Amino acid sequence: MTAFEGFFGFYVFFPEGLKLLLSVILLFLINFLGVYVASHFFRSFRVITLKKEVQDQLNPLMLANEALPIIKQGLNVETAGKIAEIIQRISDMEAVAITDREKVLAYVGVGCERHKIGDPIRTFATKEAIRTGELKIIDHSLKYICSVKDCDCPLQAAVVVPLKIRGQVVGTIKLYQTKKGEMPAQTVKLAMGIAQILNLQMEIAELDRQAQMVTQAQLEALQAKINPHFLFNTLNTIIMFNRTNPELARKLLIHLAKFFRQTLKKQGMFGTLKEELDYVNTYLVLEKARFRQKLRIIRDIDRELLNYQFPVLTLQPLVENAVKHGITPKESQGTVLIRIKRDGEKIHVEIKDDGVGISPSMIGRVLEPGFGSGTGVGMSNVHERLLSLYGREAGLKIESKLGVGTTVSFSIPAFKIEEEGERENEN
Image (cartoon, rainbow, N blue to C red; front, side):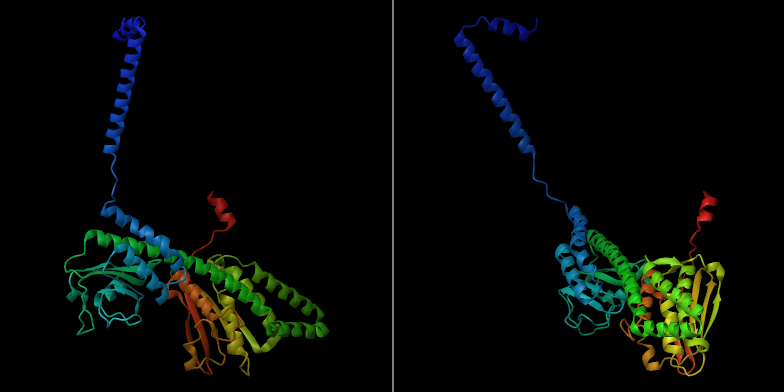
């Protein structure tokens, strides 16, 4: 028999008064023990203060939350100014600056009044960060190598981090302090984290912009082809052939319907070169019927490239531009050459005409958004999409001479799209 059993064995024989007293004592002991345990628990529970390193890790997340709606509008003076204010607030730095590749987009905090928003980049350190794509850490004001002299600048140390989209440097973010000496390691990590967040958000915004541009291109292409000038000219040609050659008129109507269907059907950013050429050929059938012998087309195309990836609505606007602005104003017969060849790891495209050419004063404006008659997708749209998809070197190159003609060219990476049969064989 245990002590516990023995105690309760005698307990039943205790007088009622003693039983009551023992119950009160036992209840008191249990309550005391409960209070002691609770007070010990709460004394051991402390309010946790985040370490500086943890706060630095959270700061880029705060930036991501606040900056995404802003960066979607692109990197410009207005958006850069708002982002710089957010960065300074969450980083508690003396000054923050954001640049593109050429000029200062934003500056907040202490500094020299001779450095103004919109001015060209003045410091060698920033130019080197843009040129090399590498982070730069400055521990003394003399190492900025600033071209502005006689400037009482309080800034001493800085970290300069390149901003990149798809590996291409598009600008920098700079965090400054007024104390001499190397930037603290956590500040450098913070700057790198902020740059990574901005890089990611700019890439997301760029993809979103590309999708919008493709949609815009589709709508503009459809509107352009329903434009009265194009539609009426094509219908007049069909009506004329309806009297002299009904079978040809019927075929042209089929091509016109096919052209509209192809315009509506195009989705996404990429198709194949074959699909793009089909679209161009449908357009040229209609234009050849209208211009007859005045328009001559030469195709020099590597057929092995037909199943290679190609950005949609890219060729037709360039061919249309050659026909409309190069050959149409010309009094005699004109020729448009469509040349597509393999050049190493790239596809080189060339659209050449022997038309009236472009004046030197106008050639610099051809790629400006909104420039021209507005009846087509526009060369500027094609140019912007090529830059967005493939980088700074992939845009349109234009060579032209009055009375001689114009050549528009571009190069894109060669990427073959597997056919169903090839995929089944591999499987």
